[in-house]
Amino acid sequence: MSTMDKIKELISLMNANDLAEIEIQEDALRIKVRRTNGGFQHTVLPPGSLPAPAEALQQPVPKTDNLVEISSPMVGTFYRAATPGAEPQVEVGDTLDPETSVCVIEAMKIINEIKAEVTGKVVEVLVEDGEPVEFGQPLFKVLPAASGG
Image (cartoon, rainbow, N blue to C red; front, top):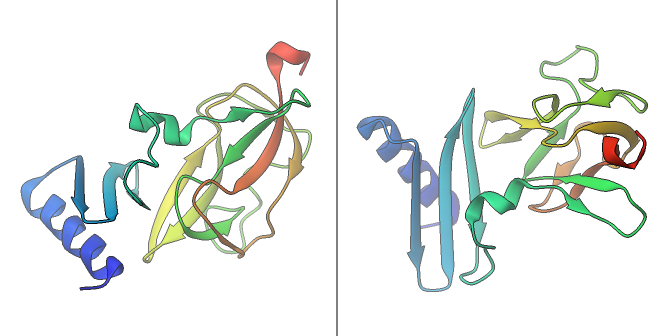
């Protein structure tokens, strides 16, 4: 069974049993699926590569240049707007708070809203609209409010 088939099976199991989160590990494969607002978020990683706690997967990581990167929490296709033809959700210079939706990532025809999870100002968009992204790939650079943003 392919990884995608396993993810689809887990989503079906979650829907059938009204679960918010499920995680499995088989040999060298670890899959975690979490229900989010408007869709599902999934992570596929080799064992031992998940930080503890697992929620740290979505936390921005401060860099030495005082900027924070908002990284992709999953593999999928990056879109700056929530719907085709709409304006981008954020632009360079926009002020963010942790609940600001910055983009969406489509994975398996499910649209996943990505929140900033940081307060600050967008200084750079690192990915082009419609581009495939990997887990952990930086999407935006943000000047945190604590650094004068």
